[in-house]
Length: 416
Ligand code: HGY
Ligand code: MN
Ligand code: MN
Image (cartoon, rainbow, N blue to C red; front, side, top):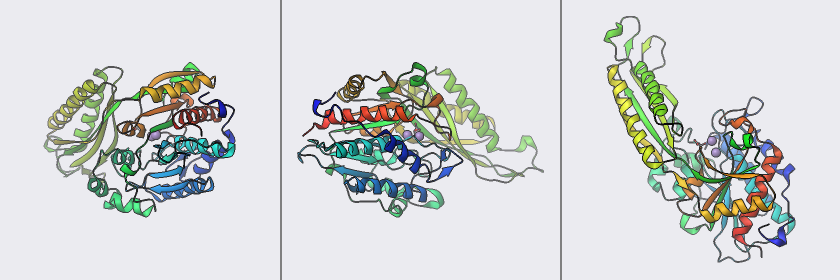
């Protein structure tokens, strides 16, 4: 155990599970899904519920320009830097009940467990809800943690446009959580993020916990394919500049480029929006977003260049132009060895089956790792399914991951 005096402290698995289910009622999709896009009314409602739990736990709440929420439990030694843990409460439009949510709720559960056991830590503890991890309405994703880590300037953050031309600053203010806290007021000792694996490895290997060593790199490319609007009945096929046809060819070529880059490469188009929406209009413009990932920085850069070239070549082959710009670049990130070891040591001391593994999905921890020692804990999820309403994690696995989180946090914070 990380500290003999708290070795027998156990988290409350029922409370942790019940909170998942209660949050999942906000923005429910079908029986098991969630749509709680960042800075929507549903996101605001989830924030209010989370805040009520934090206040009931005696935590004081602060927020910053990006709407990130920090629930603070003082330590015995106020000169010590806080140990933080958390993730995100926003979801994909057809998301599940665990992606991000589990990391926030597990951090809160860890702190409440210490409250219940009357354990004081030397360093303060903070439970964090990062704003807009998913980047659905306000692109790109990982926005709150990126701003906190100094990767986006204030004015650029404020001006990001969402639905109907809404500014990020106004949408964040409408949730009630656009606050004054500056990142330099909150230098972190460390940050831990628990998350469902979103992949199949832990379940297949029958491990209970993943000790995450790194996160692969990602780039988002915005592509505008420009052709000419035309009448579907009168314009001969050979006379068209059909942007939708060109965009479809681009999707196929991007997939080809991804496959050619080896089994670690990922290339996807998840957003595809024709400028017109008329069955009898040949679309003159299509916007799409390309998501490209690889664990190796140089390989990722080479793949991005090939994807850009594929966009312009496929557009030109259909008489169109493609304008490509980069929206987001997150480098591959190795986590802090001492924090990774703290997670592994906690899993070992708790007698849990665990393994070290990299993350295929992106996480706020990637950004926070740029400013504080950081590590992640993975929990198995059924069939590796995520970004899907079927996403599911077992109550006992969440509890085991939460125990690891608690003890990794204690290893950093010290027990008073
Ligand atoms: O896209 C990602 O990897 C994250 O789940 N938003
Ligand atoms: Mn996600
Ligand atoms: Mn997530």
